[in-house]
Image 1 (cartoon, rainbow, N blue to C red):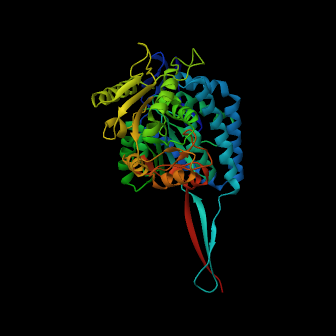
Image 2: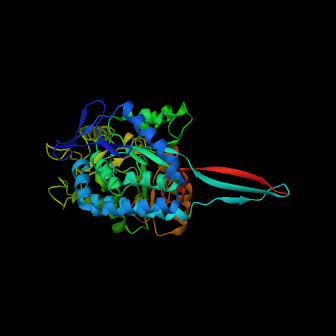
Length: 477
């Protein structure tokens, strides 16, 4: 078993508490490491280090900050296999998904480095003779980055990459379920010589570490990826200092299939969008609406693909399509949601049960006979369960798709551009994928509406999250 360490002000440290929190492998339920149980004092030391480092870091020309991001990307690549193994063990990703996560994390740091010469201001026409108005961009300051467990490594880059190129410093709190990849990442930034205090890592309980960070007057923005409940708690903590929040929360993505869609390809896209990362992605397809005229044929295609999904320990078998859910509570939650759907009239076509008696595995599950009023259509499942709903009318299916409190991702499958355009205009979601799987690009902007969040990440708009504006009125004569 490995003892992990926090990283504060350029040093690897244990917690003042002297206490530890175990980390489990969700495939085996075995303890694989333990993390320091951070304290409020640890948080404040990290925040003080970030504050002290922020001025000198912002004073560096952006191109010099970019050079550090490039070094970090190369450092990740030099330890690629190690990070892949860690993510598979502590989060349960398949080797394919773990490999994508590590590679995209490195690429993301490289991509953010390109913004060094693209953080631009404006010259604004004045109403007064001889006056020059200039809008410039400044780093917002110190960032609190609170990470989820489902993409624990990539979210380091998504938050720190944009923050650092903007001239901010950051304190990162990894999920207590998946901290090892983040603490190992600290070795990369230490090896590349990133100035002390620019990135700090504090491990422990979210109820202690996350709340203290969000409620601290020492931070300027708190960026969180997590559940709606976590987002609400963070907003309450941040409110007393009117601290800016950027939240990516839950999702209940609809996939809408029209009669003219390529049904074979669509069935594969829908499957990939449902079981990706073992069904644990905020923009996974969570429900599928299928036109009445193709319902029977499309359901048969989906069923064949769902029945073929191979579930197992990704560390022992690289050929599996799905690994485990992340923890026992997740397994219990998914089980309860399926049982509730059955009690409300849903029919299990395949799956609907735990796989084995060790590890938190759940079978790929397809539910038929589902109706819009069922809980499974409205509540986020966060597991490999897909309910099928039949529809006839385009306006009706748009209304049904929007009839949830979430608004992150959605998808439409049709060969008709007018249908695609009409549905996309009507959908109340931050993202819509047309004739493809659900998976965003780093140069886009990953953002939701309604309870799916505030603000967003990726691309130039993601960098803007970490910048403030300053307008100078220069009167000349």
